[in-house]
Image 1 (cartoon, rainbow, N blue to C red):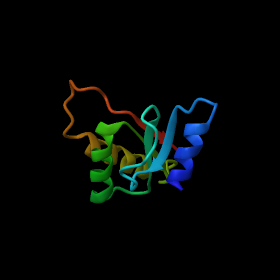
Image 2 (image 1 turned 180 degrees about the horizontal axis):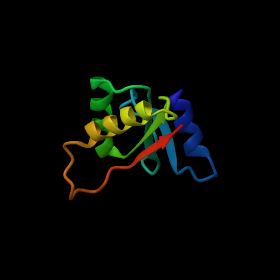
Image 3 (image 1 turned 90 degrees about the horizontal axis):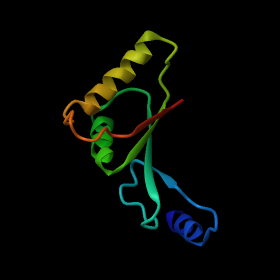
Length: 103
């Protein structure tokens, strides 16, 4: 599937700004001039998800599809704690990582 996407992007006359790939696909094969956005879902924080997002942040944009119940305070707190854990060791003077939250 990635090869078909890469070929479509390479031959497209429309500008392609970015390609969204699953966080688990750590080495997508896309043209050098196309930005890669990794995506994942969040229902609850796990050590594996925290480490995966931490390792992806230095490489570019991370899109997180929030699937926890944000209508409750517990849902917001879970998301806030997850993001705080992901960002805990980052240098405050370094460039801010780009995290896109979607619901």
